[in-house]
Image (cartoon, rainbow, N blue to C red; front, side):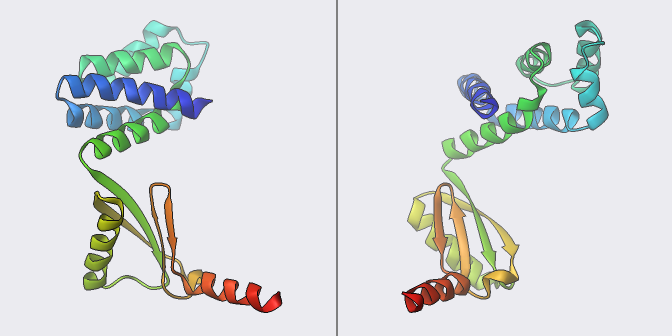
Length: 175
């Protein structure tokens, strides 16, 4: 349920920012909000029922000085409703909407060893052709896959790992 609410807030923020041609301004301001409420002490302060809203608002305005006034209103709304737990997911979702608007997809690739630069470029081109979007690649080394790679782009997973091939071979031999 919280993920749905975060997505709804992100979509509303995205629409406003898009209409005002302020997508990157909002992204930076929302990331500032996320970093601010990521502080455990400040989070506890802003969520505390013992502290009145005016005091919370004062602290929030101090921490977010200079942000877009509409982003500030969103931050105050989230605090007033006691939904600071939505902020991280909301900011993540907002970033995905902006990237989607700009034709960018994020790919996470796991390999047994670090990828060589030339192979990385080929992989980016391949994944870009596959999804029809520009790819921003995040690499992760995972020795348990033995060889090959496992790539995730959005909801697509490409498992070309030696480990998965060995498991498939094992299954077929056991039948």
